[in-house]
Image (cartoon, rainbow, N blue to C red; front, side, top):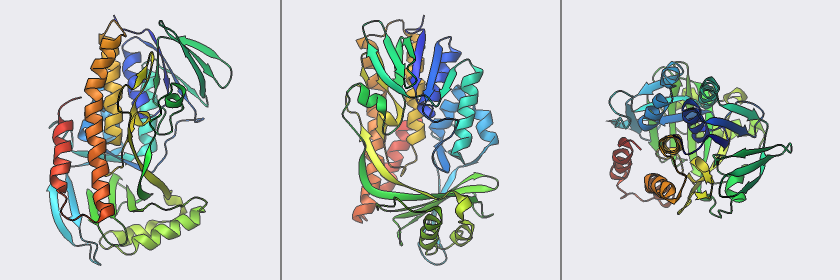
Length: 377
């Protein structure tokens, strides 16, 4: 018997939807409250490592992801010279196991749509354009209030509402994301024929220049720079800045630069990092995903760690008959050390770039993360 029969999930991102799918498929009554008015997702593309693909297979969406993504097992390092000279090509670790590719790139809104469709298929209810404004709990459950004034009584609330999580604030957790000193330009453009895997250029006008194929005809390209205040830019101004920065890199970047128009969805965000260091729950309310931990995308484990949070929490809820301290101790023991390791490694890699550190052992750092996440969560 499950420890819960009715659950509310705040936030319809990766962590929230993985939880929703598994719980609803296991017979739990699930309501997802998403503040956005429709299925959407910020960003242009997303890099999914093998351990994320393993989770997505467990929730029944791997075949759909295969149809709408681009898989590969290699990453190349290029010089920031006019030719974009290839320095090294490396075979990536298949962290999800031999049956999954090392990496799959895809259009982020497509992933959001697939997750939402699957959640509805297994019986979850999704309330778009709805904000949770109040949580009152006792020993037996939580009463949730929305911005429309509606209330609902549930056994557990899962706050999967992102970096600036209102749920985190509502339950009094004070840890918040902190800026790391880097910002990233992203764009969604046509795939040059020669781009069949991720290439990374370290140095030049930016700390990192890279791209990841997301389909037969598309990639997402990105440029990582020192954090700047880019607020207030028009779409045309954003395109012009990214085109200017991209113009200093060789290889496929010249073709990518030519594709950078306002239709490329150019946008800019700042890197953040945080981990709630102790309990992620307060009674019968728990936060997961970016609400509980965030990291720069330097090792591309954000979505993977969010998906693992959702998988572990939902699986434990379905297999347990008590929502007691022993339950939460086991959950935290399975998730906090793993997520903390990934956050620390991702932040360290970015810090080395900021400091111009040339003797940092990048292969060992990334290899350690790969070895860790290759073990199922």
